[in-house]
Image (cartoon, rainbow, N blue to C red; front, side, top):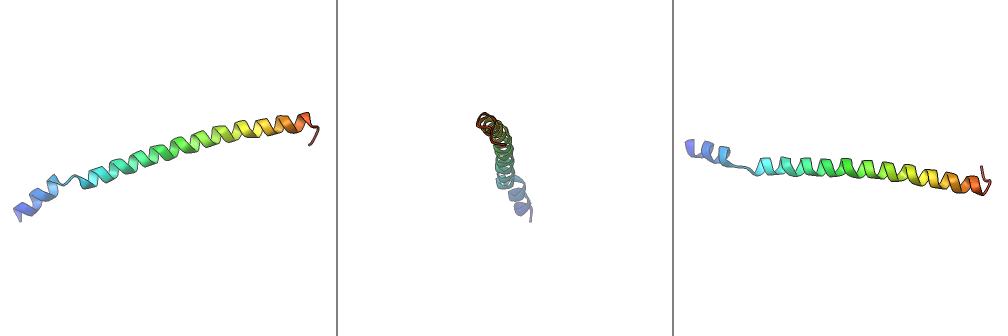
Length: 56
């Protein structure tokens, strides 16, 4: 029983999975932020083009 408890305490695979999850979450937040910023810029560009073509 003591051997089982020692192996459980030394097992780090769960910590590694949590680290990968955190990294994936941070990457997702960065992608969402970048897409939001680029989307706003593209929307402004199309609005400018439409205004120059007098399409409203």
